[in-house]
Length: 452
Ligand code: EPZ
Image (cartoon, rainbow, N blue to C red; front, side, top):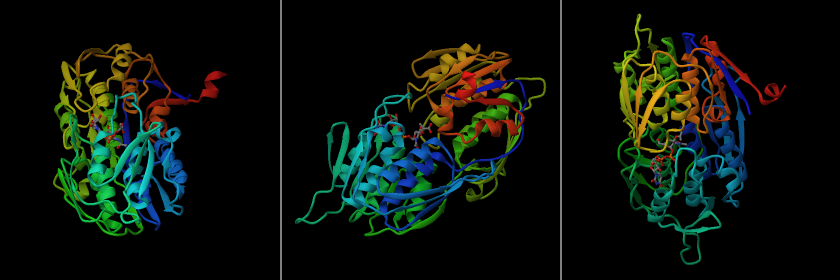
């Protein structure tokens, strides 16, 4: 497995273009299952999770063609998809276990094909991750759902011997840790083809849900209220094809903001979804980072803004911070680990609390190996800032925890070896090359090279 060797201490400077969003693109790809017409998505990043979804849709009777862009600064490639065989509706465990977003095939497949069999995703490195809310929502729309051999088997009951349709209903998507993002996407997608009106209460408000709703609307769906806790979907009998540009990745943007912050750098991000990053930018500003993003621009422009992140605090260190993860528009769980890396070097005690995935702390022990002073009490970590981190071999079996370790390595004295970067490759396209272009001393060492 590849690793990154990072020699820290270089102040990052320069410009980069944010890629299309992985977490928006994954459920959007499954919208292909809702129509027999072509679905074209632009700005799709070239990532392992996207390739897994590509493979899964192939197994579910879709033709899928991805044209990657050679330009490292392009926001992504073009994905052309079309459902040509609607008889196979089994998302197998072998694919689902590599990528939990596979659960997003359930709603679309059920709504259009009348039946779906999707392997139940197991737990993962960041926690248990149940899908009960997805199943409850689809059941409320009239699906019959059972479990067999670890698979979810969903069917729309037949009416008078004929294939039935889902029925609009009032569905509640809130759980003990907030609304479910992929659950909302699943139910919203299924409801587009239901008979009658569906009202999704306590819907996830994440920008990826808004982007998904806009894609479905462009396909002919009738959806109101996406981005608010109540989404109304008036079912239609058919959806058509679409050509759509995926929103930029707010988590990638937030991570590069942290890279500027932790190295005292000065970066300009293009195609930056600043409007979706207000809580994160607020935390960084509290720490003393300067952010310029044309705050007076209309919202639509702020989703693809030019954003300058400058963290050179003359002769000083960043200030400590308090951050608690919350559903959007609160501070996102997907940036908790990265902000913690920055807090490790702040001048004072920071308090970071994880409320969405309460076990999402794989990075804590690894940061400690680099000299960070961290004290965990349940869902809260007190970060007692130190003047410097020291390079060390580290590893984390989670995407964002790995990003956190890369950030720590960029600032640490000496060499940090981040092992098993395939986790990073699931969510950050060519991160080593992109960091090098900004001045970082990062080398990817392939497994083969490492063995020599
Ligand atoms: C999405 O996962 C993202 N994944 C995650 O990004 C992100 O961390 C998460 O939303 C929260 O923002 C994709 O978009 C592909 P949830 P999702 O259902 O939808 C509980 C990354 O690093 N819950 O919103 O699967 C759940 O356990 C990743 O890119 C239930 O209780 O997350 C959690 O505590 C990882 N029952 C909370 O809700 C359910 O049926 C939110 O999870 C579903 C979820």
